Structure formats: structure tokens, C-alpha cells
Amino acid sequence: MILCLEVLSTILSLLYTFLFFWMLHTFLPVRKHWGLRIPAFLCFCYIADVIIYSNDLSNLLGVLVGFLLYVMLFHQGRWMAKAAAVLVFYPALIAINYLMLDTSSRLFFSFTGASGDSSLIPWSPEDYLWSTLFHTAALFLRLLFWALAWFCLRRYLGQISASLTSSMWLIVDTLMLAPFVAIFTILCFLPENIAIVYPICFASIFSSFGCIYLAAYICTSVQTTYRAQALEKQKTYYKDRLQDEERVRQIYHDMKNHLLVLQSQSENSPVLHQAAQTLQDQLQAYESYQHTGNEYLDAIIRDKARLAREKSIDFTSVIHFEAGHFLDPLDISTLFGNALDNAIEACMQLPDAQRLVTVKTSRVRDMLLVLVENTMSSSLVWNGRTTKEDPFLHGFGLANIQRTVEKYGGHCLTHGKDGIFTLKILLPIPS
Image 1 (cartoon, rainbow, N blue to C red):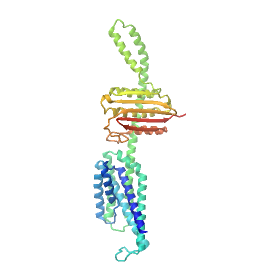
Image 2: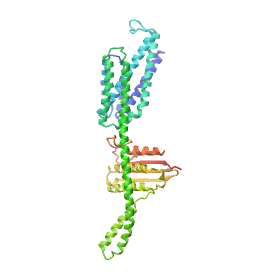
Image 3: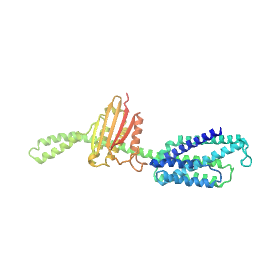
Image 4: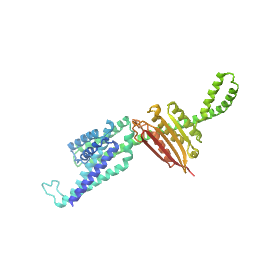
């Protein structure tokens, strides 16, 4: 029976270590070299499963130094992010391991009445069985705690890692000093059996995980405000563009008739005839612009086509948007404006001869299909959100597109391979 419990304890310890390792990996990614990942996990097994007693300075310092060296050696990221990982997870690790050991020990001695020193008064086989049973139960509760922590924090851990700036990492590090100092001091310098140890342990755990939520909340709030401002500016810009388009159309109709009269009277003046012909060619260029069936989208496509020409980008559009009447103008701006801005920006990393952007829309049965393709540099590293080094105030384009697509119950697919990036959007057309 004892052997079975010990095997179960080993399994629970390995599961706990893996779960804790995965949480830390989500917060601060392990280095990509596969040869380092197995040694990283083995080293982490010792750190995560350390036994902590009251007034145990050697183990407290040993885990702290070992944890710090482990993060610096095996994990990637800025030094402030690595310091934050230690400050966030060290207090929770120490507190949970201490509570697990101390609580199970107190329950065992209270239940069995066994001696605290088995060398003076030997334990009976039942005592060893109960000791193993209480220890196994404590390991199970520890695994349950970290599983619950992962369930509650998994969304925030990755968000913090991908979004925080250096200054925000510094704020997180500063906030985390309080639970870090509290748990280290209470376990290292206060006498054993003092009642305040347990509340301080729970407070340290709550503070550690609370700082993760707080950092994610601040990050989300700042980014949401930035997105709202960017979308409002975009909406205002395209409203102005629509007004400009209306004025241009009015001038166009009058100018076209004026040029016909001017050409009929300029036969004896080659210079005047050439000037009239040049103006007529320019007006014909306006006529060749894409007319999508939606005035708001017309303005966006014309604006992006003009920008693409200025950047020496081959811009092709085949748009049939009559079925897109159900989309709000601001959502049209979000979908096409962000998609084409990202495409043009990616093309700018290539030589002029390789720059290509294609946008297509059509109705496929009861779905509206939007397809945007562009060439991109094979050296660009795309993390699913942005290619920029600082993702905090960048990478909103695809996020805003995804949010808008979800608003209409659609699907958004992205794919980057062999120097071609593809964005495909499918939106159900209301009956």
C-alpha cells in the first residue's frame, strides 16, 4: 500500500512540475533550442518540488538563486521580464510548498499522535502509512491548486508576455516586491508555530497572481483606448474622403464637357490641343478607378491604390461588393483599411519589382468572401499578431479585423508562406 502511494506521489509531483513549468513557459517562453528544453525541465523539477520549513534560510536562498539562474539561462526575454517571472512565481512557489508540508505534518501528528522524532519513539507501520497518505493528499491538493491557477490565469499570462513594454515591466517588478519580501521574511526570520505565517502565505499567493491580472487589465485598457482613438480617426478620415469624392465627381462631369469644347476649338493650336489631351487622360484615369458598389469602400480602395502607386506597388483589385450592404461603414473601414495598410507595409520591405497587393471580394452562395494577398519578405518574423519588435501599440490591425469578423459571425484565416501572406475573411450574408 505504501509503495502504491509513493508511486502515486511521484506521478502527482511530475504532473505538478509539468503544469508549473508550462505556466512559467507561457509567461516567459523557454529558449527555442530543443537541446535546452529537456535540461530546463529537469532543472525545474528540483526547483519546483523543493521542501520548505520555517527558518529554513538555506533552502529559501537556494531556491531563489537557483530560480534566478534557471530563468536567466533557459528562458528568453528582457532582463526585466525575467526578474518579473521570479518575483511573480517565487512567492507562490514558496508559500504553497510550505503550506503543503506544514499542514500535512500538523494533520498527521494530530491524527496519529506519533512522535516528532521517530528515532526516539519508533513509528508503527500504520504511522508510516498515514504519513505517506497525508503527504500524497497534500501533493494532490497542490496539483489541484496550480491547475486552478492555470485555468484562471492562462489568458493573462500570454497577454502580458506579448504586450508589456519595458516601463510596464518595471511597474510589475516594483509591485511584486511586496509579496516577495513578505514571504521571504515571514518564513526566514519569524519563530515557528506563529499564527500569522498562514495568512501571510495566502496573501503572498493572492498578491502574486493579482499582479498578473492587474498588469493584463492595465495593458488591455490602454490598448482598447488606443484602438478606439485610431478607429475614430479612421472614420473621420474616410468621411472627409467621401466628401472630397463627391466634390471631385461634380467637377469631373463639368470638366469633361469643357474639355470636349476646348478640343474642338484647339485644332490650330498644337500646344493647347496637347494640354487638353493631357487633362482628358487624367480624367480618364479617374474613370478607371474601381467602383465597388459601396461608396465608402470606393473611397478606401482609391486611397489605398493611390498610396500603393506612390510606393511603386502593383495594386490589383477585383471587387464585387453589392452583397456587402449589411456592413457598417466603420466596419468596412476596419476590415479593408487595416488589411490593405498591413499589406502595403509588408511590401515596403521588398524591392520595387517584387511588390504586389491583390484584393478580391465576391459572393459565394450565402457568404461574402474577402481575400487580400501581398508579397512579404521571408526574413520577417510574424508572431500571429505583428512583425514589429514592440507589440504593445502595434499589431492591432489583425486583432481589430478578427473582432469585426466575429461581430458578424464570420471567420478570419491568415497564412504566411513562401513570401506570400494571405488574409481570407468569410462573412455570412443575412437573408
